[in-house]
Image 1 (cartoon, rainbow, N blue to C red):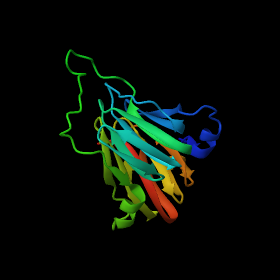
Image 2 (cartoon, rainbow, N blue to C red; image 1 turned 120 degrees about the vertical axis):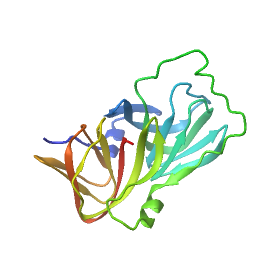
Image 3 (cartoon, rainbow, N blue to C red; image 1 turned 90 degrees about the horizontal axis):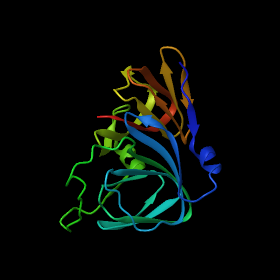
Image 4 (spheres, rainbow, N blue to C red; image 1 turned 90 degrees about the vertical axis):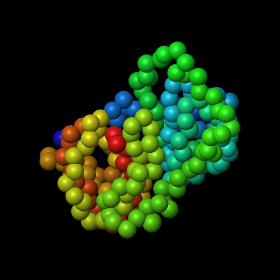
Length: 220
């Protein structure tokens, strides 16, 4: 089986309009999207779904009801449902956006999310910094959770263990350097800035010629 490899910068280069979004596929019932930001987006909130942002290149200035920050390349932040926010991107920026594709059942009262001021401020995670602190290769470190799915970062060196993708499949993204994915038959090589999605219950191994940093998105 061959895996489809997506080069994020090449896909983004074909996007003409700011704040446009392209679906790259699904991991379970969550969508993996490429999001191109430039300029300012109006204040808004999402009642039904959390949003998880991973900046591939550029920078996003975030203003929210739970604090302000700037996300740079290799940085991640979760914006929970019901939190008012807006983005400003002075430069053209490319972002991975994860959110629920199939909306949950709507019931009376379940969509009334209000920020009271008692919540913790939003915090970003720096994937590169986290990876530099990891001691064991191929051991994923959870960075964020969204609707039962986790985004994790790991270091890769030489050959990794045999693994099987969980229900819903997996996204594998080469954050730094390149990594190869070996299947029982076929596979793919990801250069830095490329990703692929593999279906559920697929046996695979990771290996690389140089130490690499890899991001995974999969069911917990």
